[in-house]
Image (tube, rainbow, N blue to C red; front, top):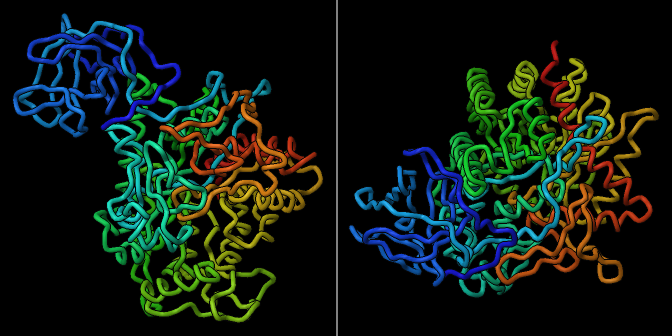
Length: 608
């Protein structure tokens, strides 16, 4: 059974007439009286399922569904309810997407009084604002490290929910099959989140998830991303992510574990997400989000007020560069072919190691219980455990489990890793130094410094913070992990201490790592005494109310950054956490779009 939810501002006016034979994009989000032969007549809300495809939702909460050669109104959602619609001379031609022989020519007359298709609300007041100020500088918040397409991560089975579904939110945000009514026996959910029995309810109550600490549930549903955009987020760097070893270990996955193939799959799905968002807005190019492949594209998209999405990779064996018993499983040709493919795809940023050592270099070690689990993966991936040695510089890795202090990963950047760094410089691609062992990190920075290459970044605090000054001196950018407000504010103060007198104003991005098995921002410790008071105004002037999805009203003071739509609320909570420096902190963050795109343009124009 579908559950309706009101959507403020739903369109009910007439569609603009499309030329005969063309897809009927403009039907999206409007109310119609539908009449035609052998079709249940009535008032229907047209919910876009894809470009030129629709669900027709009646006042009883049913959808028009192809059933053999007949058409019926049914409560059960299925792909049989998706219709391709094209304009005809005097109406519209509906064709079932699953049963092509089932088609009807119908009249769709603009009407009032439809039941709105279930959807998450935005709960904002104020139109989308241009991302440029009076001086011509870009404005807006930047998430330098997100995973919008992580539904495919680790084989797909571990991740519950999707950023969208052609069948809508009730299907996109339902729970995984392996999560019972008490959350069991979803072992990894209990290991990675708070253990113990818990509700597994998603839509419509969201009693069980999303939570700021729940790491196996969808947090970037497209309407939540849309709310973050309305609250001032103007650039997201989306990392395609995969880990072959962990993917192969989880028994319930049904997606590829090949890391480079995962990148291709996620890229195709991101493009389909863009199509879906465009479909909701009435046609190609009309949605709020665009993939960008150059600084010029990013600047144009942000200045127009839309959300730019750049592309990167965060995989454990890029280009197939696994290492087994210290023997590389790739060569320079594999690296060149892989980088060329990524460049053609639009990927402009890469992480060279992730969690485990590989043929390019050593990885930054995980500590504590997480380190124990990742250490097992290190052995499965490479056939040898991490090898540590006394740290040779002031830089520090995390402490390996059962290891002594002041010991670092003995593996640094390999010859193949140096070749990959040179390849990135040759192709004017950015290098994210997060997840590198400090020995690898130091060598990458030495190569960049020798070339005076500005294309270096740290996106989510997963490196030794003492190298921030070296990154900034190159003209690179630093983003801080989007976790607890108290930690973010303290890290911001540390970063500001690295700025030299006369330096350009700081443009600070955050790295939420959403959907990447990283906890999100928790509620502020003093939220009860000094809460974010709704509604509040985001930095771009938008009035932000509590976000409502289904029957759940999210409050950052209680729920923390439970999903991506609460990013603006999380930023507002940090404004309060920083006290007298709050406006300075948010101003630094609001300059991030300009700083990041300026860096990108500098990298593109770089010549050795």
